[in-house]
Length: 569
Image (tube, rainbow, N blue to C red; front, side, top):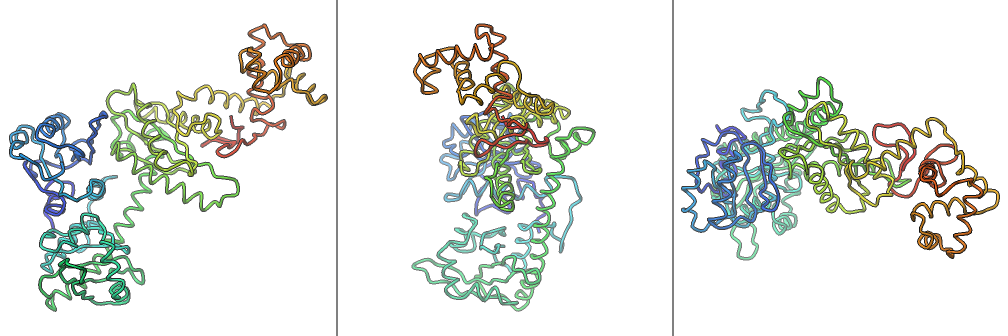
């Protein structure tokens, strides 16, 4: 097994080297622990984790690479990865020596997205909490890369560990000693489709599923491709098929190595179960930490510390999903969980220390906003809008942005403001799917005033009550006329067009409004009182005569996260 820590650059190169990454210049042993993964964007302000390994997507040429290396040195980054091969790379050696930022090259044909995912998987071990490291069979618990290297040493052959769908979970070193199909599999983190079909047609998977022993796979004959024979063994926990381990063989295994391979598969099962359980436990722990932080109090600082957010201004982001009436509850719950997981992936790609937890029917995210917070809400809103654009409108999801919390004690207020904005978005009246509390503050106030009116069992009174009574008795349209006139700021032509009547007819009706309602429309205070009462208690205001909320299509609901039932706005 490896002697290098899992979060070190030396360990990354040991696990990914030659197949995915090549070290061009720099001392990996002097780099220390990697703090996270960052993605370089030349068109946006960057906030990388401390001691980050930065993926220089689209960075080409000696000059651009040199400038970025110097910039990253000022930010305390550990390493920069650029697409290989790098022309005139020797000119960058003095810059690497000057800055101390190691320079790595990503193999041609490898995916940036796959590299980012694999790096984050490797660096995530022990990311939350500070529990002591556990081992299984002398290998750190759940560390499948270390286990793959250990098995490769036993067999003297490069090894991959795959899940039930033939996706690569981990691989050993020395993959350059295998063949082109193996390298292709690792670059894509998935066995190529043509080989999956070949194995299926020749009964390889069927034998693997039912066999307790080793399965020998001769080299497939697919055109001119040269491939080595394989030996594979199923990984099981009781009757459950978890995956498989594959070795590419240049020479047959001895009986002793075959037995070692079978024994190793049992250890792989323990690690895969531990990895799965550890992931579930970490998700639960992260949700508990997010909840504690949002509630404030004495435990908030400790929770933020374990999430790595204690010293940074933070925004609370709230995502809600409004189900259609009649939708299956289990389906909605699964959809919420799926969207919450997708939001977590999206936010951590932008800010690696973001934390997301599904609490009830709302997914809450702690989104750090280091540096200048003047434009923090706008940046968070852009990130949220990008996520919603990717997920599509069919999900019905909306995202609200709270206020900036400069200190842990301000997080509950940020959450409350996110909840207020979320209630406004659920009404569907703004036409927006994402908004900050600053964008919908007045709408939020109106909803809360309506809540108070309902709680007090307030009823219509004064001019508006007289107009509603007259309309009911005479089947008239005086309330509609008043609303149109107020919305048009007294412009009769615009107001009459909105209700599809002739301007002269509208002028007659507005005079009847003044007479029947005993309302002086020349008095600003009277106009404001009428407008406010229309919004809070009038017909179509969202409050029925009995004080309950009414619905206005998809997304409208009468209660917000963390509140009691109240009319929608």
